[in-house]
Image (cartoon, rainbow, N blue to C red):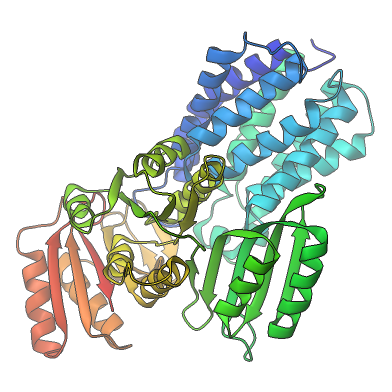
Length: 537
């Protein structure tokens, strides 16, 4: 049993946590809100912590002569390894929890109970800061509960505080379906939160020598038990603008005044560093350019995002200048070929932070736009963008959720425009492209479109199940009809690796009959899981 968290214990915690995540990997992968065959939170957490362990194994014995303590050095290696290997939203958030934990614990002579509580609180703050719009009922809620319970224990006994934190995390995990209706509908708890509980139980095991067997909790109800407030913007202002800003406090005071005159819902928070800190800026405006220019006047803005409330589609952009390149994530050989033909650097699907960072640096450009093409990779891309800043590269992430949106974004690139304007144009083009995915249900589930059984054909529009059918071709045609009913001039079809011969031809013929003035482009995409991806512009 241990009274302090030393470097050796950090190494054992990482190894034990990785082993535990591997044991629970399949279970966590199954905690998927949608009944589609690509739930991979458990896999992403395993890959993230594998990178952390590799960093510890390579460099733990190279403690510098001055600087952090031995346990602090180990924790920082673990956090840095997790960041560079992070995959998916949960992997990125976990890396930020570990970073905050390390930042707090590195400078203290010994990590006992109260120090552990402070480290968990620092990790919680870092995780919330990393998410532009935190949502309760997620991994964030679980880590916050662990930190609060650890502080409430008010003890120097390390084992007691760790045990209290782990139990509180498990209790918070059980409540996540009450906070997030999507979890309640699916009858699951939050997957990332479950992964964190496994890691905290592994820490308790390292400290006490006793393994805690804690099965995943079962939600009390498979129906929505609560509603979640979601920002949609006021009627007066059409855009939400967010960015990170490196600036002095006195310059930020002027920025606040400028943005307050432009719009509403203004929030500006800093990290407390002097004389120059990093600030998170949020505002609702009608003049996006003026808001970005106000940021440029105050300091160095980056990770700029622009959301048009009418579309409810995120559209980040970045204020970058000459030496431009585009990095695109592609799952499927045909999709990769399409992006390469557009002059983009292509990265295979589900990349780590380090792999995306390597791709960004390999372009040789000082200003790079990244198109991640799914929500999980968006978080990884944002982490890579932050790391690229250390190398003097400005990276803007346009959070495309589908390859068809990336194709729309690349089609409007114009080297004669200012880079700031070009990135905004790409973001707007991506946001204006509605997308759908057609796949087969992997399990029985209750969706917003009704119940489905394994093997049913599901058509998801903008990530939500809209249609459930039994015939693939008929369902593909039906979802195109539904989308074109809301307007559209061009349809893009990407056939998956398992698409039956003639699928895109049949959909093209259907569109020609029903929508004779709509242009159709069909390509072999080669993507797994989804026989057809659809884009409407």
